[in-house]
Picture (cartoon, helix red, strand yellow):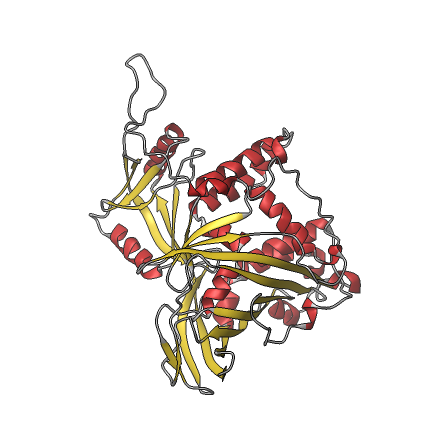
Length: 496
Protein backbone atom coordinates (compact mmCIF):
# COMPACT_ATOMS: atom_id res chain seq x y z
CA UNK A 1 0.00 0.00 0.00
CA UNK A 2 1.35 3.39 -0.86
CA UNK A 3 1.99 5.85 1.94
CA UNK A 4 -0.85 8.11 0.73
CA UNK A 5 -3.39 5.27 0.64
CA UNK A 6 -2.25 4.03 4.03
CA UNK A 7 -2.83 7.52 5.48
CA UNK A 8 -6.27 7.64 3.87
CA UNK A 9 -7.16 4.30 5.43
CA UNK A 10 -5.86 5.35 8.85
CA UNK A 11 -8.04 8.48 8.61
CA UNK A 12 -11.00 6.30 7.63
CA UNK A 13 -10.47 4.02 10.64
CA UNK A 14 -10.32 6.99 12.99
CA UNK A 15 -13.84 7.95 11.92
CA UNK A 16 -15.19 4.76 13.51
CA UNK A 17 -15.89 4.92 17.24
CA UNK A 18 -16.71 2.40 19.94
CA UNK A 19 -19.40 2.51 22.57
CA UNK A 20 -19.59 1.92 26.32
CA UNK A 21 -21.66 -0.90 27.86
CA UNK A 22 -24.43 -0.36 30.38
CA UNK A 23 -24.46 -1.64 33.94
CA UNK A 24 -24.95 -5.32 34.64
CA UNK A 25 -28.45 -6.66 35.12
CA UNK A 26 -29.79 -8.35 38.24
CA UNK A 27 -29.14 -12.07 38.87
CA UNK A 28 -27.90 -14.54 41.49
CA UNK A 29 -24.08 -14.44 41.92
CA UNK A 30 -22.85 -11.53 44.04
CA UNK A 31 -20.12 -9.43 42.39
CA UNK A 32 -18.79 -6.69 44.68
CA UNK A 33 -18.54 -3.05 43.73
CA UNK A 34 -15.13 -1.84 42.59
CA UNK A 35 -13.12 -1.02 45.72
CA UNK A 36 -9.38 -0.80 44.86
CA UNK A 37 -6.83 -0.30 47.60
CA UNK A 38 -5.37 3.25 47.38
CA UNK A 39 -1.60 3.51 47.14
CA UNK A 40 -1.04 0.02 45.68
CA UNK A 41 0.65 -0.07 42.29
CA UNK A 42 -0.72 -2.65 39.84
CA UNK A 43 1.20 -3.74 36.74
CA UNK A 44 -0.57 -4.92 33.59
CA UNK A 45 0.69 -6.84 30.56
CA UNK A 46 -1.05 -5.44 27.49
CA UNK A 47 -0.98 -7.04 24.05
CA UNK A 48 -2.64 -5.45 21.02
CA UNK A 49 -3.00 -6.07 17.30
CA UNK A 50 -4.93 -4.69 14.35
CA UNK A 51 -5.69 -6.69 11.22
CA UNK A 52 -6.88 -5.02 8.03
CA UNK A 53 -8.25 -6.72 4.94
CA UNK A 54 -8.48 -4.51 1.85
CA UNK A 55 -8.46 -7.30 -0.74
CA UNK A 56 -11.55 -5.75 -2.34
CA UNK A 57 -9.45 -2.77 -3.44
CA UNK A 58 -6.05 -4.37 -4.11
CA UNK A 59 -5.02 -7.00 -6.62
CA UNK A 60 -1.65 -7.63 -4.97
CA UNK A 61 -1.89 -10.04 -2.01
CA UNK A 62 0.94 -8.25 -0.21
CA UNK A 63 -1.05 -5.03 -0.05
CA UNK A 64 -4.50 -6.43 0.75
CA UNK A 65 -3.95 -7.71 4.30
CA UNK A 66 -1.76 -6.25 7.03
CA UNK A 67 -1.22 -6.71 10.75
CA UNK A 68 0.28 -4.31 13.28
CA UNK A 69 1.08 -5.56 16.79
CA UNK A 70 2.24 -4.20 20.15
CA UNK A 71 3.16 -5.49 23.61
CA UNK A 72 3.38 -3.24 26.67
CA UNK A 73 3.76 -3.20 30.43
CA UNK A 74 1.76 -0.39 32.03
CA UNK A 75 1.40 0.46 35.74
CA UNK A 76 -1.57 1.97 37.56
CA UNK A 77 -2.00 3.31 41.09
CA UNK A 78 -5.21 4.56 42.69
CA UNK A 79 -3.96 7.66 44.51
CA UNK A 80 -7.19 8.49 46.33
CA UNK A 81 -10.86 7.56 46.42
CA UNK A 82 -13.99 9.22 47.84
CA UNK A 83 -17.74 9.01 47.34
CA UNK A 84 -17.54 10.97 44.07
CA UNK A 85 -14.70 9.25 42.25
CA UNK A 86 -11.01 8.41 42.19
CA UNK A 87 -7.66 9.91 41.26
CA UNK A 88 -5.53 7.43 39.33
CA UNK A 89 -1.97 7.60 38.05
CA UNK A 90 -0.80 5.58 35.04
CA UNK A 91 2.94 5.15 34.42
CA UNK A 92 3.47 4.40 30.73
CA UNK A 93 6.22 2.70 28.76
CA UNK A 94 6.79 1.82 25.10
CA UNK A 95 9.41 -0.82 25.94
CA UNK A 96 8.70 -4.46 25.10
CA UNK A 97 8.04 -6.44 28.31
CA UNK A 98 10.48 -9.16 29.32
CA UNK A 99 9.80 -12.52 27.75
CA UNK A 100 8.10 -11.26 24.58
CA UNK A 101 9.28 -13.40 21.69
CA UNK A 102 9.91 -12.02 18.22
CA UNK A 103 11.88 -9.23 16.64
CA UNK A 104 11.25 -5.70 17.81
CA UNK A 105 10.25 -4.64 14.29
CA UNK A 106 7.31 -7.06 14.43
CA UNK A 107 5.89 -4.90 17.22
CA UNK A 108 5.38 -1.69 15.26
CA UNK A 109 2.81 -0.36 17.74
CA UNK A 110 5.61 -0.01 20.28
CA UNK A 111 7.58 2.21 17.91
CA UNK A 112 4.50 4.31 17.18
CA UNK A 113 3.65 4.51 20.89
CA UNK A 114 7.17 5.68 21.74
CA UNK A 115 6.72 8.56 19.32
CA UNK A 116 3.32 9.33 20.87
CA UNK A 117 4.86 9.64 24.33
CA UNK A 118 7.51 11.96 22.89
CA UNK A 119 4.93 14.08 21.07
CA UNK A 120 2.75 14.42 24.17
CA UNK A 121 5.84 15.07 26.30
CA UNK A 122 5.01 12.64 29.10
CA UNK A 123 5.19 9.04 30.24
CA UNK A 124 2.64 9.42 33.05
CA UNK A 125 -0.99 10.50 33.27
CA UNK A 126 -3.08 11.38 36.30
CA UNK A 127 -6.80 10.87 35.75
CA UNK A 128 -9.96 11.72 37.56
CA UNK A 129 -12.34 8.78 37.16
CA UNK A 130 -15.81 7.81 38.26
CA UNK A 131 -16.24 5.01 40.78
CA UNK A 132 -16.24 2.42 37.97
CA UNK A 133 -12.82 3.62 36.84
CA UNK A 134 -14.09 5.37 33.69
CA UNK A 135 -11.85 8.39 32.92
CA UNK A 136 -13.70 11.70 33.11
CA UNK A 137 -10.89 14.28 33.42
CA UNK A 138 -7.13 14.60 32.97
CA UNK A 139 -4.69 16.60 35.09
CA UNK A 140 -1.82 18.51 33.52
CA UNK A 141 -3.60 19.20 30.24
CA UNK A 142 -2.08 22.68 30.02
CA UNK A 143 1.46 21.26 30.18
CA UNK A 144 0.75 18.58 27.59
CA UNK A 145 -0.93 20.93 25.14
CA UNK A 146 1.76 23.59 25.57
CA UNK A 147 4.41 20.96 24.81
CA UNK A 148 2.54 19.84 21.69
CA UNK A 149 2.19 23.42 20.45
CA UNK A 150 5.93 23.85 20.96
CA UNK A 151 6.69 20.66 19.05
CA UNK A 152 4.36 21.71 16.22
CA UNK A 153 5.94 25.16 16.01
CA UNK A 154 9.60 24.34 16.64
CA UNK A 155 10.00 20.68 15.79
CA UNK A 156 10.65 17.66 18.06
CA UNK A 157 13.38 18.09 20.64
CA UNK A 158 13.32 21.87 20.18
CA UNK A 159 14.92 21.67 16.73
CA UNK A 160 13.59 24.54 14.57
CA UNK A 161 11.07 23.24 12.09
CA UNK A 162 11.19 24.55 8.56
CA UNK A 163 7.68 23.26 7.99
CA UNK A 164 5.77 24.91 10.83
CA UNK A 165 3.49 26.72 8.38
CA UNK A 166 2.96 23.44 6.54
CA UNK A 167 1.98 21.82 9.83
CA UNK A 168 -0.63 24.52 10.36
CA UNK A 169 -1.97 24.04 6.86
CA UNK A 170 -2.07 20.23 7.21
CA UNK A 171 -4.38 20.46 10.21
CA UNK A 172 -1.90 19.61 12.98
CA UNK A 173 -2.80 22.76 14.90
CA UNK A 174 -6.49 21.95 14.61
CA UNK A 175 -5.84 18.49 16.05
CA UNK A 176 -4.02 19.95 19.04
CA UNK A 177 -6.82 22.44 19.63
CA UNK A 178 -9.31 19.57 19.67
CA UNK A 179 -7.18 17.72 22.21
CA UNK A 180 -7.23 20.79 24.41
CA UNK A 181 -11.01 21.03 24.09
CA UNK A 182 -11.47 17.32 24.84
CA UNK A 183 -8.58 16.07 27.04
CA UNK A 184 -10.09 12.57 27.12
CA UNK A 185 -8.76 12.15 23.57
CA UNK A 186 -5.29 12.25 25.15
CA UNK A 187 -6.34 9.47 27.52
CA UNK A 188 -7.68 7.42 24.60
CA UNK A 189 -4.40 7.85 22.74
CA UNK A 190 -2.06 6.97 25.61
CA UNK A 191 -3.96 4.68 28.00
CA UNK A 192 -7.10 3.16 26.40
CA UNK A 193 -6.63 0.27 28.85
CA UNK A 194 -8.31 2.39 31.51
CA UNK A 195 -11.64 2.23 29.68
CA UNK A 196 -11.46 -1.50 28.93
CA UNK A 197 -10.70 -2.34 32.56
CA UNK A 198 -13.59 -0.13 33.65
CA UNK A 199 -15.94 -2.14 31.42
CA UNK A 200 -15.90 -4.99 33.94
CA UNK A 201 -16.16 -2.83 37.05
CA UNK A 202 -19.26 -1.47 38.79
CA UNK A 203 -19.46 1.24 41.42
CA UNK A 204 -21.93 -0.88 43.43
CA UNK A 205 -22.53 -4.53 44.24
CA UNK A 206 -24.20 -6.44 41.39
CA UNK A 207 -25.71 -9.92 41.14
CA UNK A 208 -26.01 -12.16 38.08
CA UNK A 209 -27.10 -15.73 37.29
CA UNK A 210 -24.67 -18.04 35.51
CA UNK A 211 -25.83 -18.76 31.97
CA UNK A 212 -28.83 -16.53 31.14
CA UNK A 213 -28.10 -13.54 28.95
CA UNK A 214 -29.20 -10.02 29.83
CA UNK A 215 -29.84 -7.82 26.81
CA UNK A 216 -30.32 -4.06 26.68
CA UNK A 217 -30.51 -1.54 23.88
CA UNK A 218 -29.54 2.11 23.63
CA UNK A 219 -28.95 4.72 20.93
CA UNK A 220 -25.48 6.04 20.10
CA UNK A 221 -24.82 9.19 18.08
CA UNK A 222 -22.44 8.59 15.18
CA UNK A 223 -21.81 11.86 13.37
CA UNK A 224 -25.35 13.06 13.89
CA UNK A 225 -26.97 9.69 13.10
CA UNK A 226 -28.75 7.87 15.93
CA UNK A 227 -27.60 4.23 15.84
CA UNK A 228 -29.31 1.57 18.02
CA UNK A 229 -26.77 -0.64 19.80
CA UNK A 230 -27.68 -3.96 21.42
CA UNK A 231 -25.56 -5.14 24.38
CA UNK A 232 -25.70 -8.65 25.80
CA UNK A 233 -24.09 -9.55 29.15
CA UNK A 234 -23.57 -13.13 30.35
CA UNK A 235 -21.99 -14.49 33.53
CA UNK A 236 -20.14 -17.51 32.14
CA UNK A 237 -18.58 -19.02 35.27
CA UNK A 238 -17.10 -18.43 38.70
CA UNK A 239 -13.95 -19.86 40.33
CA UNK A 240 -14.35 -20.32 44.07
CA UNK A 241 -10.63 -21.01 44.58
CA UNK A 242 -9.38 -17.99 42.63
CA UNK A 243 -12.33 -15.88 43.82
CA UNK A 244 -13.12 -14.68 40.29
CA UNK A 245 -16.08 -14.41 37.93
CA UNK A 246 -15.81 -14.60 34.14
CA UNK A 247 -18.24 -12.48 32.14
CA UNK A 248 -18.83 -11.90 28.46
CA UNK A 249 -20.19 -8.87 26.66
CA UNK A 250 -21.26 -8.71 23.03
CA UNK A 251 -22.34 -5.50 21.31
CA UNK A 252 -23.70 -4.98 17.84
CA UNK A 253 -24.85 -1.80 16.12
CA UNK A 254 -27.89 -1.67 13.87
CA UNK A 255 -26.42 -2.28 10.40
CA UNK A 256 -28.71 0.07 8.45
CA UNK A 257 -28.25 3.02 10.79
CA UNK A 258 -24.51 2.43 11.16
CA UNK A 259 -24.14 2.21 7.38
CA UNK A 260 -25.88 5.56 7.06
CA UNK A 261 -23.52 7.14 9.62
CA UNK A 262 -20.42 5.95 7.76
CA UNK A 263 -21.27 7.23 4.26
CA UNK A 264 -19.02 10.35 4.49
CA UNK A 265 -16.06 8.22 5.60
CA UNK A 266 -16.75 5.61 2.91
CA UNK A 267 -16.94 8.32 0.25
CA UNK A 268 -13.58 9.69 1.41
CA UNK A 269 -12.04 6.21 1.23
CA UNK A 270 -13.34 5.68 -2.29
CA UNK A 271 -11.58 8.84 -3.48
CA UNK A 272 -8.31 7.01 -2.89
CA UNK A 273 -9.40 4.28 -5.29
CA UNK A 274 -11.16 6.44 -7.89
CA UNK A 275 -10.27 4.26 -10.90
CA UNK A 276 -11.29 1.06 -9.16
CA UNK A 277 -14.53 2.66 -7.96
CA UNK A 278 -15.51 3.57 -11.53
CA UNK A 279 -15.55 -0.11 -12.51
CA UNK A 280 -17.79 -1.33 -9.66
CA UNK A 281 -21.01 -3.09 -10.52
CA UNK A 282 -24.26 -2.04 -8.86
CA UNK A 283 -24.03 -4.98 -6.44
CA UNK A 284 -20.41 -4.20 -5.59
CA UNK A 285 -21.20 -0.54 -5.00
CA UNK A 286 -24.08 -1.50 -2.70
CA UNK A 287 -21.73 -3.80 -0.80
CA UNK A 288 -19.13 -1.06 -0.42
CA UNK A 289 -21.74 1.29 1.05
CA UNK A 290 -22.78 -1.22 3.73
CA UNK A 291 -21.13 -1.04 7.14
CA UNK A 292 -21.33 -2.95 10.40
CA UNK A 293 -19.55 -2.97 13.75
CA UNK A 294 -19.50 -5.47 16.59
CA UNK A 295 -17.60 -5.89 19.82
CA UNK A 296 -16.84 -9.03 21.85
CA UNK A 297 -15.34 -8.83 25.34
CA UNK A 298 -14.44 -11.39 28.00
CA UNK A 299 -13.64 -10.19 31.52
CA UNK A 300 -12.28 -11.86 34.64
CA UNK A 301 -13.42 -9.89 37.69
CA UNK A 302 -12.25 -10.27 41.29
CA UNK A 303 -14.90 -11.38 43.78
CA UNK A 304 -12.81 -9.71 46.49
CA UNK A 305 -12.72 -6.09 45.35
CA UNK A 306 -14.63 -6.02 42.04
CA UNK A 307 -11.56 -5.13 39.95
CA UNK A 308 -10.95 -6.39 36.42
CA UNK A 309 -8.02 -8.81 36.53
CA UNK A 310 -8.00 -9.84 32.88
CA UNK A 311 -9.77 -8.62 29.74
CA UNK A 312 -9.84 -9.75 26.14
CA UNK A 313 -11.57 -7.61 23.49
CA UNK A 314 -12.15 -8.04 19.76
CA UNK A 315 -13.74 -5.23 17.75
CA UNK A 316 -14.70 -5.79 14.12
CA UNK A 317 -15.65 -3.02 11.71
CA UNK A 318 -16.66 -3.71 8.11
CA UNK A 319 -17.17 -0.69 5.89
CA UNK A 320 -16.25 0.56 2.46
CA UNK A 321 -15.19 -2.88 1.24
CA UNK A 322 -12.65 -3.21 4.06
CA UNK A 323 -12.49 -5.10 7.34
CA UNK A 324 -10.67 -3.78 10.38
CA UNK A 325 -10.33 -6.04 13.41
CA UNK A 326 -8.60 -4.96 16.64
CA UNK A 327 -7.49 -7.26 19.45
CA UNK A 328 -6.62 -6.24 23.01
CA UNK A 329 -5.60 -8.48 25.91
CA UNK A 330 -4.87 -7.11 29.39
CA UNK A 331 -3.62 -9.21 32.31
CA UNK A 332 -2.75 -7.98 35.78
CA UNK A 333 0.73 -9.34 36.39
CA UNK A 334 0.07 -10.77 39.85
CA UNK A 335 -2.72 -13.02 38.49
CA UNK A 336 -2.54 -16.18 36.34
CA UNK A 337 -3.98 -15.94 32.83
CA UNK A 338 -7.29 -17.72 32.26
CA UNK A 339 -8.53 -16.31 28.95
CA UNK A 340 -7.19 -17.69 25.65
CA UNK A 341 -4.95 -15.39 23.61
CA UNK A 342 -5.90 -14.77 19.97
CA UNK A 343 -3.30 -16.32 17.67
CA UNK A 344 -2.42 -12.96 16.13
CA UNK A 345 -0.96 -11.79 19.46
CA UNK A 346 1.59 -14.60 19.62
CA UNK A 347 2.26 -15.40 15.94
CA UNK A 348 5.94 -15.49 14.95
CA UNK A 349 5.37 -14.65 11.29
CA UNK A 350 3.06 -11.84 10.20
CA UNK A 351 2.52 -9.65 7.19
CA UNK A 352 3.19 -6.14 8.42
CA UNK A 353 3.05 -2.80 6.56
CA UNK A 354 6.30 -0.97 5.94
CA UNK A 355 5.57 2.16 7.97
CA UNK A 356 9.18 3.41 8.08
CA UNK A 357 8.79 4.52 11.70
CA UNK A 358 11.60 6.86 12.73
CA UNK A 359 11.95 7.80 16.41
CA UNK A 360 11.18 11.39 17.28
CA UNK A 361 14.07 13.18 19.03
CA UNK A 362 13.25 14.08 22.61
CA UNK A 363 14.72 16.95 24.61
CA UNK A 364 13.64 15.35 27.88
CA UNK A 365 14.09 11.92 29.42
CA UNK A 366 12.09 10.13 32.10
CA UNK A 367 8.45 10.73 33.00
CA UNK A 368 8.48 14.23 31.56
CA UNK A 369 6.40 17.30 32.23
CA UNK A 370 3.76 15.57 34.33
CA UNK A 371 6.28 15.07 37.14
CA UNK A 372 5.08 18.51 38.23
CA UNK A 373 1.54 17.26 38.88
CA UNK A 374 2.18 16.77 42.59
CA UNK A 375 3.12 20.44 42.95
CA UNK A 376 0.07 22.53 43.93
CA UNK A 377 -0.94 24.92 41.15
CA UNK A 378 -0.12 28.57 41.53
CA UNK A 379 -3.03 30.68 42.79
CA UNK A 380 -5.02 32.41 40.04
CA UNK A 381 -4.11 35.95 39.15
CA UNK A 382 -6.02 38.62 41.00
CA UNK A 383 -6.27 40.64 37.82
CA UNK A 384 -5.74 39.74 34.19
CA UNK A 385 -4.88 42.28 31.54
CA UNK A 386 -3.93 42.76 27.95
CA UNK A 387 -0.94 44.80 26.90
CA UNK A 388 -1.00 48.30 28.42
CA UNK A 389 -1.99 51.29 26.36
CA UNK A 390 -1.80 55.01 27.15
CA UNK A 391 -4.38 54.59 29.89
CA UNK A 392 -2.49 51.72 31.54
CA UNK A 393 -3.55 48.08 31.76
CA UNK A 394 -7.12 47.30 30.84
CA UNK A 395 -9.13 44.18 31.71
CA UNK A 396 -10.43 41.85 29.02
CA UNK A 397 -14.18 42.20 29.23
CA UNK A 398 -16.41 39.12 29.29
CA UNK A 399 -18.43 38.45 26.14
CA UNK A 400 -22.02 37.26 25.97
CA UNK A 401 -22.57 34.98 23.00
CA UNK A 402 -25.60 33.98 20.96
CA UNK A 403 -25.97 30.34 19.96
CA UNK A 404 -26.99 29.25 16.48
CA UNK A 405 -27.20 25.55 17.35
CA UNK A 406 -26.29 23.18 20.18
CA UNK A 407 -26.36 19.41 19.83
CA UNK A 408 -24.94 16.39 21.64
CA UNK A 409 -22.72 14.12 19.53
CA UNK A 410 -20.48 11.13 20.20
CA UNK A 411 -16.94 12.03 21.19
CA UNK A 412 -14.13 10.77 18.88
CA UNK A 413 -13.22 8.39 21.70
CA UNK A 414 -15.24 5.82 23.57
CA UNK A 415 -15.27 7.92 26.74
CA UNK A 416 -18.47 9.85 26.34
CA UNK A 417 -20.18 12.61 24.42
CA UNK A 418 -19.63 16.20 23.38
CA UNK A 419 -21.84 19.26 23.27
CA UNK A 420 -21.13 20.91 19.93
CA UNK A 421 -22.08 24.60 20.10
CA UNK A 422 -22.15 26.72 16.95
CA UNK A 423 -22.25 30.46 17.50
CA UNK A 424 -23.99 33.01 15.32
CA UNK A 425 -21.68 34.84 12.87
CA UNK A 426 -21.72 38.00 15.03
CA UNK A 427 -20.88 36.05 18.19
CA UNK A 428 -18.22 34.02 16.36
CA UNK A 429 -16.45 37.30 15.54
CA UNK A 430 -16.77 38.48 19.16
CA UNK A 431 -15.43 35.12 20.39
CA UNK A 432 -12.47 35.31 18.02
CA UNK A 433 -11.61 38.83 19.24
CA UNK A 434 -11.89 37.68 22.86
CA UNK A 435 -9.65 34.64 22.37
CA UNK A 436 -7.12 36.70 20.45
CA UNK A 437 -6.83 39.11 23.38
CA UNK A 438 -6.81 36.26 25.92
CA UNK A 439 -4.04 34.10 24.43
CA UNK A 440 -2.10 32.52 27.29
CA UNK A 441 -4.91 33.07 29.81
CA UNK A 442 -7.22 30.60 31.53
CA UNK A 443 -10.83 31.37 30.72
CA UNK A 444 -14.26 30.18 31.80
CA UNK A 445 -17.27 29.22 29.72
CA UNK A 446 -20.57 29.67 31.56
CA UNK A 447 -24.01 28.44 30.56
CA UNK A 448 -26.77 30.23 32.47
CA UNK A 449 -24.22 31.50 35.01
CA UNK A 450 -22.74 28.03 35.67
CA UNK A 451 -19.07 27.36 34.82
CA UNK A 452 -18.85 24.30 32.55
CA UNK A 453 -15.22 24.38 31.30
CA UNK A 454 -12.04 26.36 32.02
CA UNK A 455 -9.81 26.19 28.94
CA UNK A 456 -6.49 27.98 28.53
CA UNK A 457 -6.43 29.95 25.28
CA UNK A 458 -3.27 29.11 23.34
CA UNK A 459 -4.32 30.46 19.96
CA UNK A 460 -7.20 32.59 18.65
CA UNK A 461 -10.28 30.44 18.01
CA UNK A 462 -11.96 30.98 14.68
CA UNK A 463 -15.06 29.41 13.20
CA UNK A 464 -17.44 30.00 16.10
CA UNK A 465 -17.31 26.47 17.55
CA UNK A 466 -17.24 25.61 21.26
CA UNK A 467 -16.96 21.95 22.26
CA UNK A 468 -17.75 20.70 25.78
CA UNK A 469 -16.84 17.10 26.65
CA UNK A 470 -18.55 15.13 29.41
CA UNK A 471 -19.15 11.35 29.94
CA UNK A 472 -22.70 12.09 31.16
CA UNK A 473 -24.66 12.58 27.92
CA UNK A 474 -27.80 13.52 29.88
CA UNK A 475 -25.98 16.45 31.47
CA UNK A 476 -24.88 17.61 28.04
CA UNK A 477 -28.42 17.21 26.72
CA UNK A 478 -29.67 19.41 29.56
CA UNK A 479 -27.13 22.08 28.58
CA UNK A 480 -28.19 21.84 24.94
CA UNK A 481 -31.85 22.28 25.90
CA UNK A 482 -31.02 25.30 28.07
CA UNK A 483 -29.35 26.95 25.09
CA UNK A 484 -32.46 26.50 22.95
CA UNK A 485 -34.60 28.65 25.26
CA UNK A 486 -34.81 32.40 24.57
CA UNK A 487 -33.39 33.11 28.04
CA UNK A 488 -30.52 30.67 27.52
CA UNK A 489 -27.15 32.36 27.34
CA UNK A 490 -23.47 31.56 27.17
CA UNK A 491 -20.77 33.80 28.66
CA UNK A 492 -17.02 33.60 28.20
CA UNK A 493 -14.68 35.42 30.59
CA UNK A 494 -11.22 35.29 32.13
CA UNK A 495 -11.04 33.05 35.17
CA UNK A 496 -11.39 35.28 38.26
